Length: 73
Image (tube, rainbow, N blue to C red; front, side, top):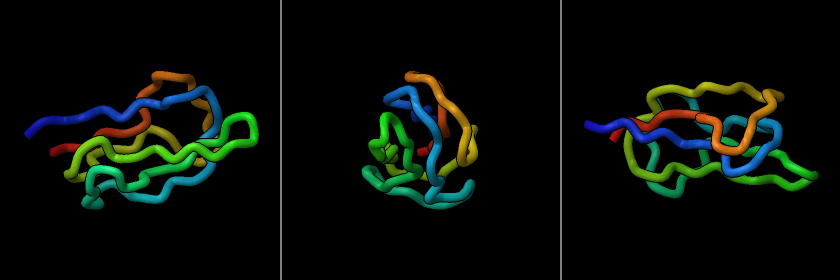
């Protein structure tokens, strides 16, 4: 099994977390939604697997490239 880090595509704020640790995700499933410059940016699973960890909570500020979560496939 491998762990895939999912990083923030933008600098912004975590608006909503849609999934929980332990959830099964498929490639393309929305894990969380970021807000940047009044736009909602969905963060999607890059591979199918189990959501191993979530490193942020709603209202956290994030930088572009910052790790948001890990999917174990």
